[in-house]
Image 1 (cartoon, rainbow, N blue to C red):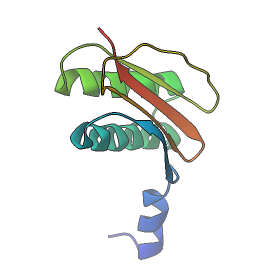
Image 2 (spheres, rainbow, N blue to C red):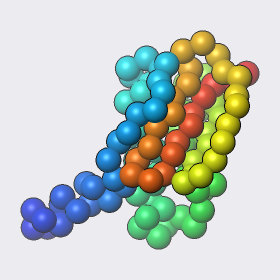
Image 3 (spheres, rainbow, N blue to C red):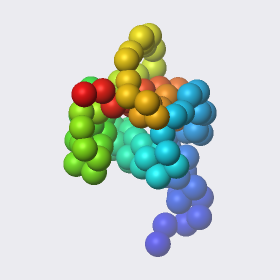
Image 4 (cartoon, helix red, strand yellow):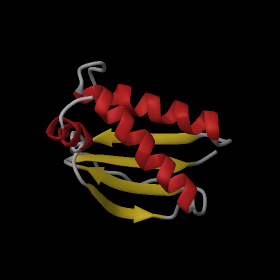
Length: 105
């Protein structure tokens, strides 16, 4: 078991959560944050190379668990103007990295 300080460092690797906009039900919101945090941690640990890889993981997880077509945008700087289904969009930051996840189609 690693010392307490190392556990805390791993826990905070992705940074703090800052919610920008959410229409997802609580269970999907929690899934979005957890899945995004895990995928971003994989990138920060060097197992992935690009934010596109993070997006691909999150999209796959959402489409495996929830029906329909989900779209995922991940990065430090992006703009968006999207059409989404009712109550199927979330936009948040983990540290400096933004996550936009929405269902359409």
